[in-house]
Image 1 (cartoon, one colour):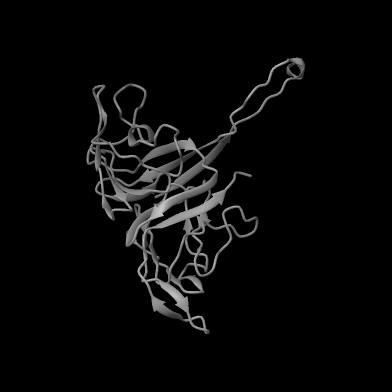
Image 2 (spheres, rainbow, N blue to C red):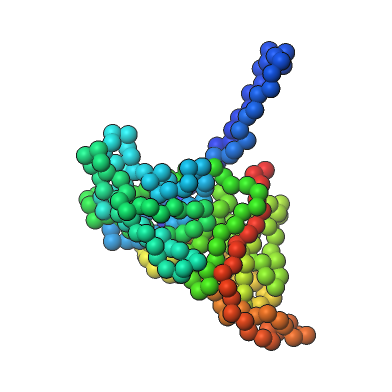
Length: 274
């Protein structure tokens, strides 16, 4: 999956003549962003995440409409299917299939909302006769302030709400810097000993899970190619987060001494566009 991200900040204009007018103007300070994501041709899959808030409830029918302006809904291959993941329930929920053409196209069965930070699978429809990847664009407001999403008990398809490629980081027994750190920003994911991240790749060269870093108590993420701060997560990219057994205490040498089950966690961090 390839991504391309842009930010479109609201511009404020002030003409000299306006300074003499006895009125106050209020401007939106929202920052609008978009990310273009690539989906491989059928039967390939991609793991995505909605990083933005569209301000309309984040329904799939708005986020990925597929409307080309003609009413024929040709921007997404016919038969494309998404598989949203419910982190709290630990299962897939509300699958939706895309149908093109005749003025009544679009997503069918799409009652689901794709909230920022919630990941999902997408599979291109077999009607993609070109045999090449297609792209779709996610657009919405860049969320700022205190942000959060849900990390489930066992497995979660997670994603970043930050419009920049950043390492996943960690927050638990030790903390990595936050997203606005000027020298070493990370996404500060809540972490327990034994947590594993599975990154899925599907392109013309290869598909499947590659690097799978593991979090170690007091050390950070460790794997063959990842740094201590873990793998870099791109805007619009989804990934599996598998919870480890967890530890609630440590002995004087820093070794975990007692195991505890991990409940549903809030992946919370603070971010401001600067």
